[in-house]
Image (tube, rainbow, N blue to C red; front, side, top):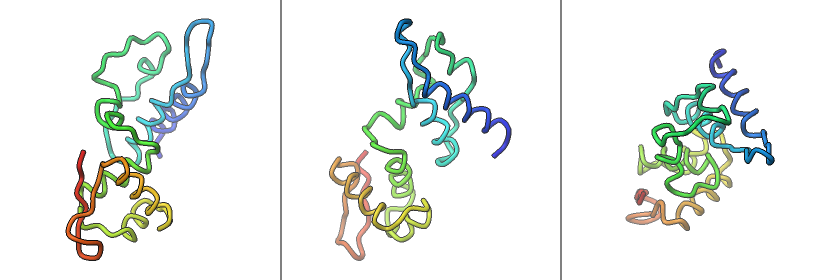
Length: 135
């Protein structure tokens, strides 16, 4: 991890934990989500200090909601698994576990959650089928 990434993570952590209710400032995990999305999913959100400043007037071009939060993901793990499935619809759960560093049980839970939300579906059977991405 280079110095730029370390500074971005530190700033995102501060912003995620800062509250000033008298001024109407609430903590937000948006910048942490953008940081980890850049790190894990190779996205390219700009994480400049001016964007994380509490007085910054946000325009929607920088918002993570334009891509990742258009749908309701409970975790970044779900988003990572969905991206891997989209890239390779025939991927096996064991391969997902290896790619994400998660256990098979965690991958099964994530896949079930994505199916329950109708983000993915299984096509052409369990053993030799493939995943259909519905979002």
